[in-house]
Length: 229
Picture (cartoon, helix red, strand yellow):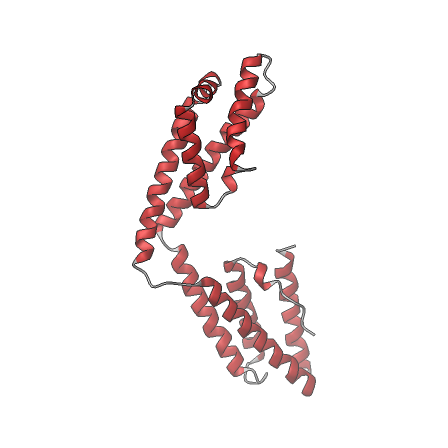
């Protein structure tokens, strides 16, 4: 009767908005008339709690600065990779060999440092930068390809990122713990409880109101699922 929403695949913001849209449909049909008042109230309260928790995780100015600095260091390491990759085709063999040397060190940390989680990327970049400073062959390769300033900027960005990250750790330590995963699980359970009761009432007391409400649910579900194909 109800289409299956891909709830576990929705982003936190998508999940919250999906719940709000579902609650709106219920309000339009009147939760009391649908005989789902308690389930509606539970989902509404759970959604408000989830949204409050989510906004708290997004509201810190430090979070925005961390995201911006992470993007900066991502662009720097990706730039170094692309320049090095282009130089592997250099007509001067020493340049091509230098490029290969740099790429081989970068690829020691996996297919993409920029896609690592925050802590793993910080560690990988710190190690790579230290190696570029202390290994004479790698240092020579970096100099030959004109990447010294790139590595300097990368080090500065990585240090600044870690400074901001540790500031947020200190900031978060003073806040009550928020478990978004648990809140989402509760919200999913509340949604399923609501649809279970709607299905039961629609089966026992079929009416145009139930049919219309369920159809609206399914339209929303299809639209949100399309975002996660």
